[in-house]
Image (cartoon, rainbow, N blue to C red):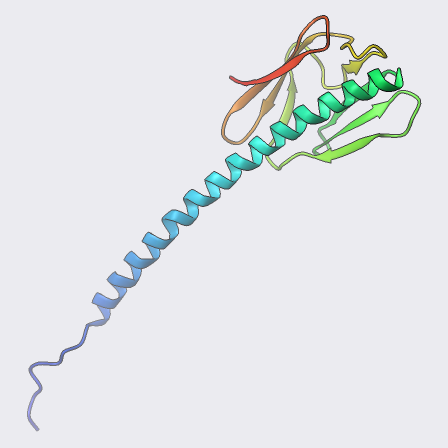
Length: 148
């Protein structure tokens, strides 16, 4: 039997090296997309939080009723609760987002019947990528969210 000297194929080691490179090059963009998705989810949450705070303020003003904005750290959610009515709205927070007291407690966000905040102060919003502060100003009930 004659030995074949020119086999025109690839060895198992060569195939495993190519397959390993293929896996690495396809996993890299997937990881980047997941990080991008997390950032967009946090941005959407912050936008929704801002809109819900404006809704609570407007609800208090239009119904002439004291309105509480309550963060529930146990269920990772927040609620808009008028004083003499059932809850007007409830929303879930994304996983990994936590609200912490700075100069204002989570339960101290109360809008008066005139739409002003009862007590000014700051809350800290911790997300997986960065921290934000939610600042309520004295007077007209204005607030803003900024990265720390």
